[in-house]
Image (tube, rainbow, N blue to C red; front, side, top):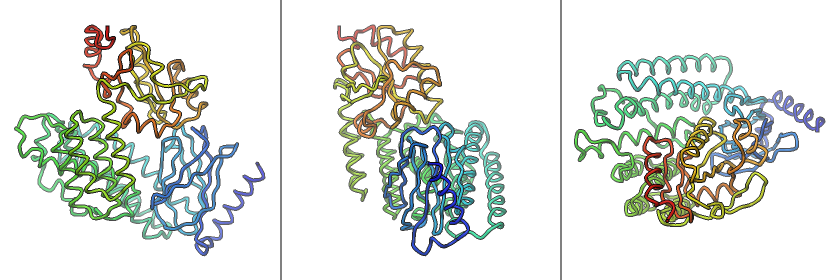
Length: 480
């Protein structure tokens, strides 16, 4: 194996020296090492949404020679986390990352590495800055907040100019690098009214200073090369959230509390996306996830059907439409009174068990992700508290990731959580579809017979414990 690694390193060195040699036969090289892997493979998705599965060897390394059909941003995925990589002709890139600190640990080497190390550096910086901006927008006046954002954007653009001055780069890279900065700036401007005014006073979004959204004239709705730029879609979702507010407040009273689950509001978002975007790739993405988010939280079957009907008429992706139709069916099966879907799980002994067979008394089924350590800790601490207050109940924790047993067990052990009453899906993709899991914040509450009381329990809300105590007191959970 050491000989193979040395050969690979030699190959990458030679490719780096040869410059554009690989552009002649249209191939690129991609390989790397995953430290603390969650499973034994990496998935690489092309800009055309074609997938390739690259398996890790016994030393957690992989290597692939690939035809480059199109230069652009590819997505590599491991253990439910993902990041982008820009492939252009002659690239021969290796990655090294530690899943414990996925983005921050990611390093590229080889020909084409410098531009990718720049992009991941800006991404990590933007993520850190966005947390800071999130705190500032609660209290900072619009003009002052805008000044902070402009200063941050100008600093990053100046740093980009310095980076580009050191070496010649392709127009594609320059466009992607600049868009990463600009659309992150645009995103924070669109997010601002939701943070500053809050849902209670969001109607005052109309009071934002004149020119606050002048940047919208620079927005590109149909540039498919931006589809892989992470801040781009993030911006677009909040952009349409904002545009749809006008329709929402046409009939709402001045003191109404904004309801993001409103069918009127969500249908307006779909209408705007359909009318303003010509690109099927970009439009289908926005339509799919906006519809998904509404369907998984709505309690009104007629509104779900209305949303579904509108969506199916506008989307041109048959695979997306199949996904949404199956999701709607799953949501309907999760209505109160139905038995919870009998999902197959693996326990801590690697035994396959069925979910319904685990329910002996009132049970809270909650979900966690190894990619969200804060939520992982908080959910388990919350459940520990609930166990002491409600000893007549059981609690089942399920990891939603496609983790192997070793990583699943290690994740729980490192936080000192026991593996009893903890499970993972046999088929995570199928199970998440059947349970309509859109967020690990949501839990399912069932009675002793496995019948659903609510499929959208929010255990972190202040009302949850009171509601739970009332249900137990009135015997609704025990059927006695």
